[in-house]
Image (cartoon, rainbow over all chains, first blue to last red; front, side, top):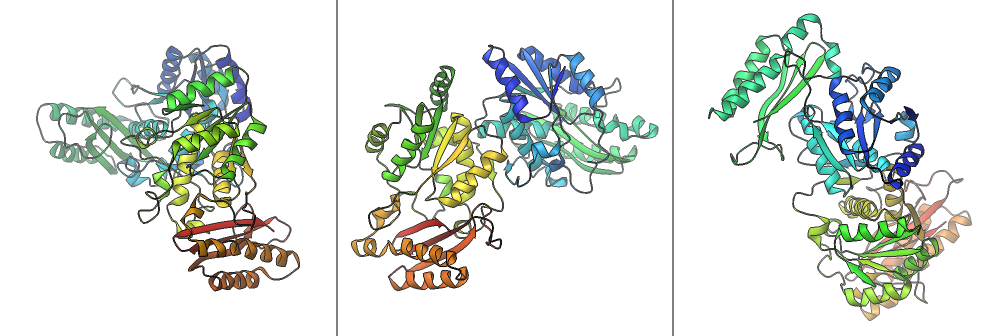
Length: 278
Length: 278
């Protein structure tokens, strides 16, 4: 697989494929690959003739106290995994290529960005929307794939791409889970053995909530019970356990619209997030 | 000249031209055409094989107390003028095509947007950066032309396009002036006869400042004198008379870098702006 480090080289290859009549797929990642990422590549491959994977740990979406430095980086291993999954081009720019001196422009998606994760990571979705806009404009792919595991991020990126008229279809890919239900995440590797054993409770809690809501139990009560259960099994802090409108991410008040249950909680050094459709 | 009202139709024509090997130029305007706008079309024509002119009075860059409703609108006359100047396609969307229900995404250019006009029109450059990003992404032209008359706007758009990696060259076109030096502007038609007679003083003041700075006189003194002179001849309010760094728009402290003199002042119902290189 070819690796390019400049936007110009990325564009040259993407344009050549498009001019040859091929559909181009894009899979933006921060590396630390697991099966979840590879499923994105495979889904992109189903919708495109050529798949570009990107590898860029985006400093703009980490706060100073977060794990930017600790975030796993292994370009050689990630490149092999991308290639085996069907990607043909790896775009792995350095920070100065993405944010050259003087870069100040921000893309924001008000409304979707202040709730849930945005309430706990105030700069996160600004950083996400800006890097996603840049990568989409750089590649001008026909389709780009993001994981439903980061559900709020997926909604922010869908809204941003639609609002800025970026002619790339944004696809969400289903969350890939370990055998015990834990959503795959680059941050799972921060867990100790004991924490790893407790981690699937976040999935179990979301299942109980979605089952309960479907059975007519009030979402607020179910979320309160879920929060307590996470603390019981050793989560040290629960940022949120919520049921919201699946598109607007605002409180789910209209039972006729799709809803989504989401949770974020800290287990040792790892902040785990997960979500399920109601 | 063909007129299109949807982004899809705009894209179809622009893509067809590009696929035919032609370079595409874009001239975004709010209408109210005068010679200044037509010079943008002619400059675009020099750099492109096909020129798209756009006509859209962008509500997002007007505050509630500003002249959105009064802004001149005459699509038939503007279309003829564009066509005579060399444009081949007019993109004249309605508001719902540009900002459909649910549109929330904002593009901002911090640093360039809070100073000068931004200090007096706090929402202006957010509205400008967002619509410019959208139009550039919609058309994906090879080159887009904006007037130097709106100098701060030009710098904001240049920075935004560079930061978001939009592959369109942004060109500034020199200000076109009436015989007495008044910069052409759609808002000049708000002036009474007496006001029109006083209006060129804003250009005269900027000439005195740039001549004075080149002659070694302090910019602050020259700007204070210029402000007083504008008030003397009947301007009712002076928002700013400033000399700033031509790229960063911050106070010009480094004499080795290009500087720009800019002024904004109210004459009757019209807020006039103008600028000159030092």
